[in-house]
Image 1 (spheres, one colour):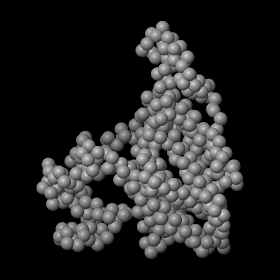
Image 2 (cartoon, helix red, strand yellow; image 1 turned 60 degrees about the vertical axis):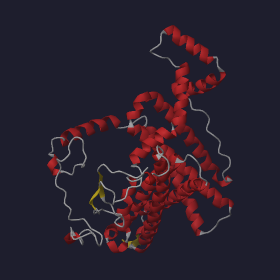
Image 3 (cartoon, rainbow, N blue to C red; image 1 turned 90 degrees about the vertical axis):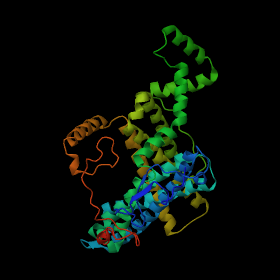
Image 4 (cartoon, rainbow, N blue to C red; image 1 turned 30 degrees about the horizontal axis):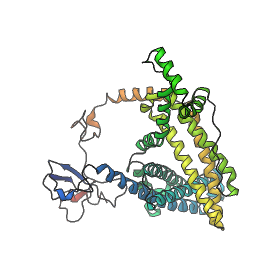
Length: 425
């Protein structure tokens, strides 16, 4: 990891500030590096440890991003609920209509879960836990996705007024969308959660497969000898038997027991235990079904990852509520939170069950065919009509000329594009 400054030879800032849909308080320049020589004292940490620096920064960045999404979502929720209670239609406030109440309940449930998950994750940061890449990735995906849902619900409740700048929601709307992309696009994060989260179980399954599985590259005698020898080893047999019962017979093990939650949360604890058992079972089943092909099955990975994220969300929400129950917290806000957690658990279970079913029954085949057809058709459209990535390896220099009229330069940056100053503000 290196520190580069604009005054270094070869650093070319060829566009100082790009006009953006949202987060307009930040400065996004475009920079090229042309044989830049960086002095030794500009080395961050140690040579060869740049990835560690980047990952450490990502852990913090994903938490601060989540905090921003939480703040925006909470403000959007409160504004949307207030609007639903004071805006009347058909002789009643909007909050009297069930579909509006559904959005209100969802906003309350999701913001509580976001808050609980962020609290749990930042606690890990404060304790300096060593490996929290998985937890920070889950927190980022959950808070950006659910925060976007909350803001969208508030926009829908406020209707056309939400688009009016004076009501502030439109800025939260514009500023929130980027967070599903930055600090790791959520599609990439889903694959990471699947691969890194399932790493230990996958390695265990591979060891069992190598020890007692049939190897098509070995002869009959060699296979029988190896399998017989390994099955007599206690540790291998203890892992191979229950795994074989699950993946070949489809018999699930007993659910884990969650016993330390407040007694009033026993029902939710049992549900969480069953969902955790079913999630682990589904990982083993799809790993056996697809084997190495699962590396290219992003849709399958996303379903498994999403279930892990929802289960983690339930865990954090119940943990937070357990703390408040044991502390004897009372009042209107607590009752709102308790109802929100109950609704969140219902929402999470529905999402998880739908994903489990989609691992067996889905539209993936038709999706891939439709995507192929759409890609083939797009190839017939001339590149000159579209924006093309500047460094595209297949279409460099073939896209349309991009208008710079929306560019806003900061004071003192020169007269270039000065006429467009107002347009980009």
